[in-house]
Length: 184
Image 1 (cartoon, rainbow, N blue to C red):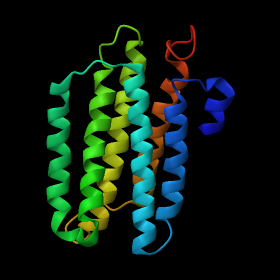
Image 2 (image 1 turned 90 degrees about the vertical axis):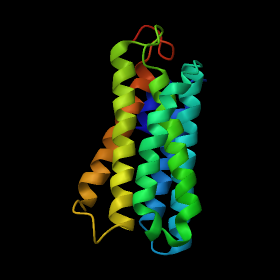
Image 3 (image 1 turned 180 degrees about the horizontal axis):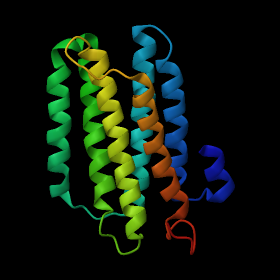
Image 4 (image 1 turned 135 degrees about the horizontal axis):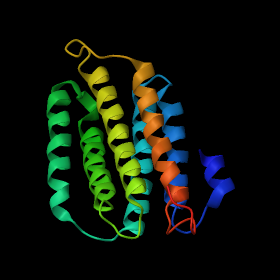
């Protein structure tokens, strides 16, 4: 996806998606290694991916739409509460991670209704963000609630993660404000 963005149109707007993808790749590689410290490094790298994705969303739509933040904070709070007692040393990093996810979803939803971005592009990007968040929430449940959680498919979790990343990347190179006349 990074090579594709580079080959299509890396510019002053969509660089956030490009850098976010790089951090996501590094985070995934790091989280495959064993150890608490390595796991924290992987979480931090994925947090940085969320920060850069959010920068992209803010740069493409500066509207506030603060009320859209509330449901995302509620959803991520529920996920956090469900896994809280099993988090151990990860309580603070995962709390920050959940807040970043709420902001990430809020900023991607703020683009919905923007007249400068095609409706299809808005929805593909937002649904991709929801899929990414679902994937990470499933991963969190499988890691921190393993005896109570029925779904534990690494393949499905990772497939959802990268499908969401792809949906976001597609809109980063095809949105009209980033790629001239090309529309998704």
